[in-house]
Image (cartoon, rainbow, N blue to C red):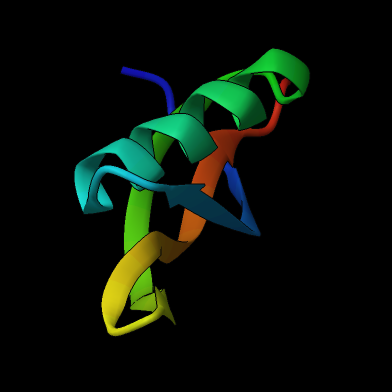
Length: 69
């Protein structure tokens, strides 16, 4: 097994339907431009309220991606 080195990046995902979708949206979008995304960690969950109802869910994530050898 090879030892790996990882770099962290912080991103925010959003969704009108829920926290799970916000996380998945963020990971999918990051994976379009960042290679070797291998894990994530949620840092904060927040939302946007409009007229007394939740309009958007936002999740701040740290993503770990493997640095190439």
